[in-house]
Image (cartoon, rainbow, N blue to C red; front, side, top):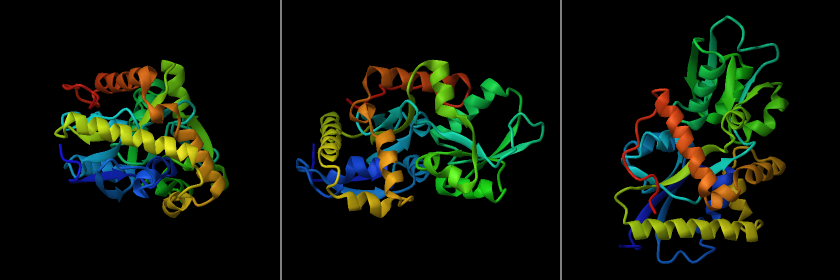
Length: 285
């Protein structure tokens, strides 16, 4: 086990991730001898990079992780799960998925949980209806809908707080639909480590992330500029709403309810032919 090896740690610039990792990034806590090369990228970019094993420790959409369980294992800290925090389907006023016309749906990447959840939703409520999925960076979705490049958009992150200001309407809360179907939290994003990583080292990293979360809650104002610097939406109220919604008890520890939610999500994906069977233990430790 070599903590001095510089491990590649990757997460998104979204406020929930920068809040979770700011104590690590700014070395506000004892890193226990670890050295990290930190990379911030959009989650879908991280999903694609994980296919090539680019990062040792990485944020992933749960949908992407479900396709990468041969090469990555899940940590119990740092995840985004919860109730009332799922993706939203939005459009300009007067649009409806019940219309007979073919619809173009802007999604934040084909490997994202939001995209997979939308496909579950369509299969449940609109079986047989065909749509065209148009993948793009998450911050381009609402503009694409406003500019009529897409009929609907699946918005994530801070998009759920600002879509009304762009004249858009919510057509469905995909997280609420999931909760009604399963009575479980929606698994959005996770932190995963390469399966080749020493188990004891993976557990130490998991504990370190937990300490970083604890520090962030104890000292929310400390290194807040780190969060502001990377936030797509710079409005302070939106940043705080984002953190309150996506950093919760499941972020500190996935817990039993989180485990059941993740397994249920993966089972639905397998049943729909969208995710492979998991052949290894889900968690790194």
